[in-house]
Amino acid sequence: MTAQAEICINPGLDPAPFAEAFARDGVVQIPVFLRPADAEAVATLLSGLTWNVVAPDETSDTLVISSQVIQKFGEAQVRQFLQGAIKRASRGFSFVHLSYACRTSMPATRRRPSTGRRSSCRGGPSSTSGPP
Image: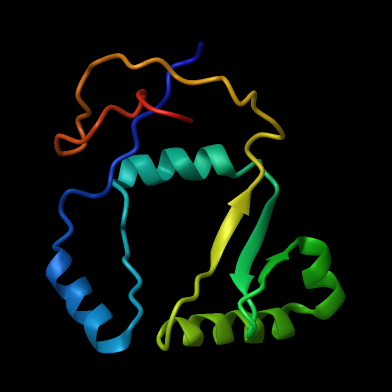
């Protein structure tokens, strides 16, 4: 079994300004969310994968926007749709994220064994314990 990399939230983040922005605007974007080295590791891992943009439409149906959809409708229309999803987040629930097909299937019974070691991510649980 291959070792799993430990990825941690940037410990230098002060949550107070983000909480204030969220309380005021109903939405917040957190820059430098991961430790820089972890962000680079994630970027390297994801760079070769196919991605889709995932966001809800006006009726809360989740849409998956692939590169084919972007080609069909054009970048401007897709950008306008995504801006609408972000605006809806300030009035209720919404999201925009990239989705990567990291695995095509995984047996339901497969679980990573617990190593019993503590994470170096501010005392959190080990990244090698629990379900995948």
